[in-house]
Length: 189
Image (cartoon, rainbow, N blue to C red; front, side, top):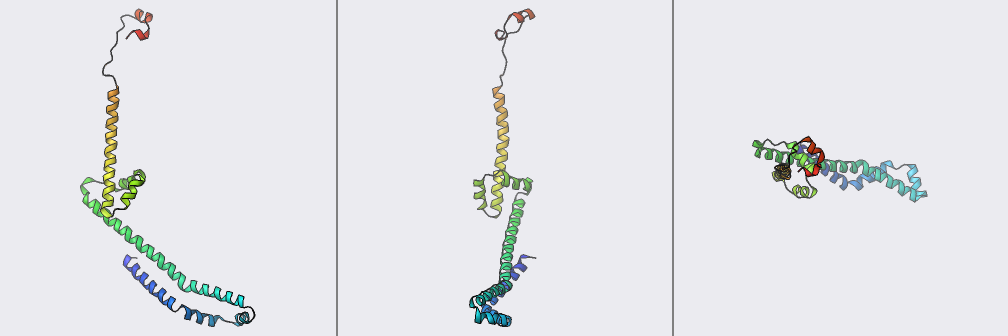
């Protein structure tokens, strides 16, 4: 069902609820007049507490059958409309973002995974305040920055390892195998 059709149905439900609330007392009075039997009349004259208790139970049943179901349906329909509108806005923003960056071959699933799994909570709170294309652009910028950091970290680590390695090993050669047996390993160098 399209959003517009749901909105029309919601407005109809709201009007029905307003009409039902306006005529609630009269409708319930008619309902009780039809529902009154000898047992209820006896309760009225003999046991007023049980009489009013049965009237209140009947009133609650009447409300549930006539108004509560419509109110619950209206609330659910309103939430459904709101969710549909939000998802439609998100899809439009996503399409605009992908159109803006069509030359970059963006894997949208990677962006979603980055947002859900790697992005710290404090960044998420700030990004969630943004709307539309700005939301996706911020995630993309952070994603690119994180990818750049990973590449730079890899290069820096390789350079650090290279710096720690000696350039040339200096030592004394061993002239003969007999000499090697008599000298300590530590004095050869």
